[in-house]
Length: 210
Image (cartoon, rainbow, N blue to C red):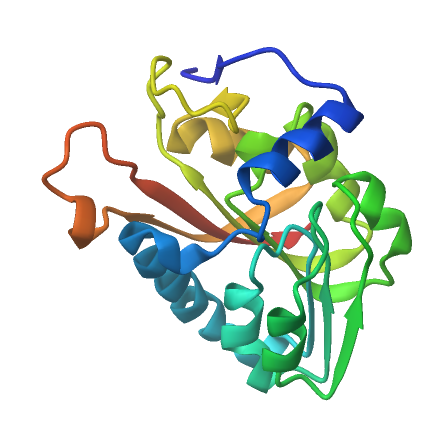
C-alpha cells in the first residue's frame, strides 16, 4: 500500500473558511492547463457510458465544467459545492431539469440528494478527511461513480488542499471495500505539464455499485 496521510484535518468551519479564502471568486478549472485536459478527458470517459446515464450529480462541482460537458445527455442534473454553485455553472447546464444544493461540504450534502444514475467525484476524494466513508455513502444514492484523483502525490508537494495521496492499486482496493465494482481505469499524464518536475498525473475511474 502507498496510501499516505499528507496532513491533519481542519474543522468543518475552518475548511469552509479556507476554501472561501483561496477561491474567493470560485474555482475555475481553466486557470490551469492540466485541469483543462483532465476535465475534457473525464467527460470523454463518462460519455462512453451515456446510454446508461440520464441523471447525474456533482456536489463538489467547482465551476461545473465537467457535469455541464455531459449535460446534453441528461434529463436531470444536480450541482453543489462547498463554495456554492456559481451562476455561470447553472446557466451553462443543458439538462432538462437542473437542481442546485446550497453551499455545503461532502458528505453532509448527500442528505439533500435524491438518487441519480451517476455521481461525479472529480478531484475531491483527496480533499476529504474520511474518504472510505464517503465512498461507502455514495452506493445508496448512485448506480455509477466517476472518480478522479492524483496518482501518488509526493508527501512534500505542499498542496494544503489535499489530505491524502494514493496509488492506483490503493484506489482500486478502496472502491472494492466500499461496494463499487470498477469498470474502467485510465491514467492521464497531461501534455501541458509533461516536462515539469513533480507534475500531477491523474487516475480516472468509472465504477458501478455492487
